[in-house]
Amino acid sequence: MKVVNPSSICAPVGLYSHGIVAPAAGQWLHVAGQVGVLPDGTVAEGFEAQARAAWQNLLAILRDAGMGVEHLVKVNSYLVEASHLPLLGKVRAEFQQSARPASTLVVVKALARPEWLYEVDAVAFKP
View 1: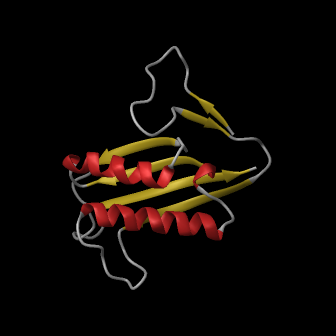
View 2 (view 1 turned 90 degrees about the horizontal axis):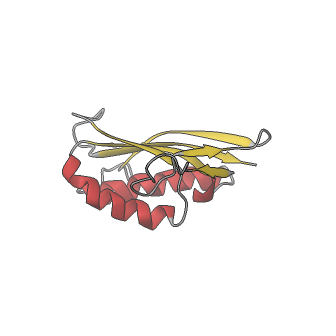
C-alpha cells in the first residue's frame, strides 16, 4: 500500500495519512462499528477503557481475517465528548503503532446506546 500525503497541503495533524492507495488485487475487510463492550457483554467503565475495548475488538476482527493494523486503510472514530480527544490519541498510538491509515474523527451528540462513549469502524486491505 502507498501512503499519500501531498506536500502541497498541510501535513496530517495526528495519527493518520491523508490517503492510502491499495493495489488492485487483494482482500478487503469492512469492519462494522466497534464499541467498548467486553467479551462478556458488559460495557467497559469510562472513556479510556471503552476506547481500549473497542480497539481490542477491532484488532480481534483483523486477526480473525488474517490481517493486522498495518492493513488498515481507513478508520472512522466517533466521540460523544471532544474533551476525550487526548485520551483517544493515547489509545490509538498504543494500538496503531506506526500504522497511519486515512482517518476521520467526528464528535457526535450520542451513539446508539447512552452508555457508549466511543465507536470505531474501519476498512482494511491485504494485498
